[in-house]
Image 1 (cartoon, rainbow, N blue to C red):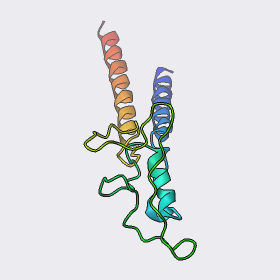
Image 2: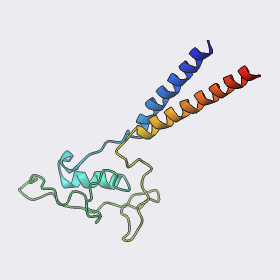
Image 3: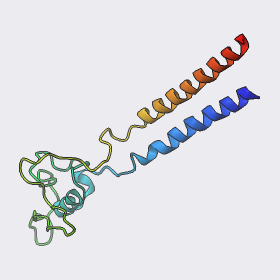
Length: 140
């Protein structure tokens, strides 16, 4: 009976580690071709600090500037407009020389491997503890 409960606990722990690993990689990853214009890409770039989607290759604050979008309106290319200042104490653009602090998301392309390995290590530690306790009982 104890082996069944131990196996059930191990399966539950592994299942929870796999299920919860999806929350870390929930943010979409878009590239320049995913936007209709440079202005749309710039708005997406300005909306999230730290450039997690890597829309600004040369770190000058302008998203997708080297991507050739189709002409808009009367044949003129899409204009690059600076981001408006936001309210609430947030700065719309990062000052020159500033350090990118990130937005708290993971930058490893959403890999769930660390969560799975952590779950396996947790289950292994629990199994070792159960085995040690069982060995101690048989000797006493």
